[in-house]
Length: 500
Image 1 (cartoon, rainbow, N blue to C red):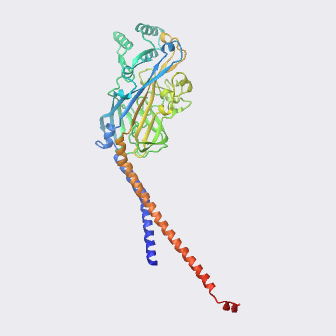
Image 2 (image 1 turned 90 degrees about the vertical axis):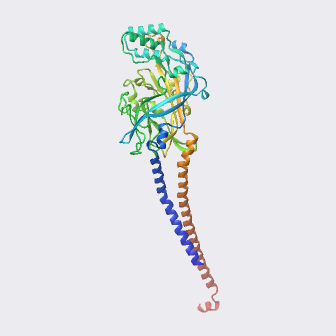
Image 3 (image 1 turned 180 degrees about the horizontal axis):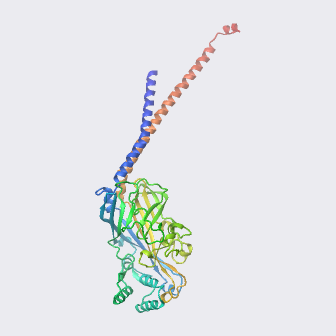
């Protein structure tokens, strides 16, 4: 009987050690297998699932805009504080497709990304024919372009504006403001310049996104991940430029990061995630803020920090974005006129989130809210794929007093006038989320159960053997003590007395 117990304990102990060793070994083996599988599936190899989803994303993209209707346009011209009222969303279904894809032996790939927009009436507050009062951007642009020219030229332009009945604020439909309309001022200026034999390259149509439907924003060159995953998705050049030429410092002109949809796998939370935005003509840094769960998938959320558009006082690294050099706007504003043909276009976060309070208070009707107005990227940490994205930006213009123009005569202090704010968002579909969980997360769960199950079982068996051995040892000690006591109790008293 004792022999059987010993054999059982030995077998149990040996199995426990084996299970524990196997579980500890699988900690490395399974992790290595997962790493290899992820890195093997992500590269943009022609024909792979990763390539197909990158080339033509299945994830539905919403492009939503909110228009700031100027409710006191006549009073602003008299020098009053602007009042605006937000209207929206006006929603468009956005489709993206990579075209002109070419691979190179050095592990890079070039492409263009075609973007198209279709109005989604069902998810909009109204139709594209809805009309609101907004800034007359062509007129403001022309006045701004000639503000440092001779007085006589400004008088001629002012006379033309009066003749054509151009006002500082005009009514435009959503469709006109977004996609363009034939502008009488631009048409007249174009005709006059042609009559003077001046080569004219600008269009007589204007819209915030004029000529941006069914078009691309340039040629990109990125690392495909075929040679190495360390720089997967990183942009090498845009329109053949490895550095931009818009800004006043080398740091500001750097093209950093990816397009914001893919990153190298197994990302570190503490690392700032960079992306390049052609809309802003610059690279941006996103910082980790918290863990989130989207459709059952754990992700790391990275957000645009308030200092993203901070002036040099708040963020010294932004000194190069002051254009002309040392001409810095209040914190939270980015002057992109250098890459918008000189048009006075100012970018910010919606409702001037992150701007100086003075800027927010200069416009009646704004209510900055971090949850609604902050840009974010939710990245699945193992694959580096962005599965939930919200790009939120506001387009503004700059109105100031310029001598010689009737419409600007009573403007007392510069106005950063909001025009629209937009939210370009995408979240992984239910089907893709289900596929991702079954193809990767479920495997990880299974391997986790196996390796930690073996470790737990092995540790439990070893613990049981130890407990049994200790218990047996204690029993032996108790038995010996009892035997000693019993022996002392049975000794004859006579013998004991004699000994004394």
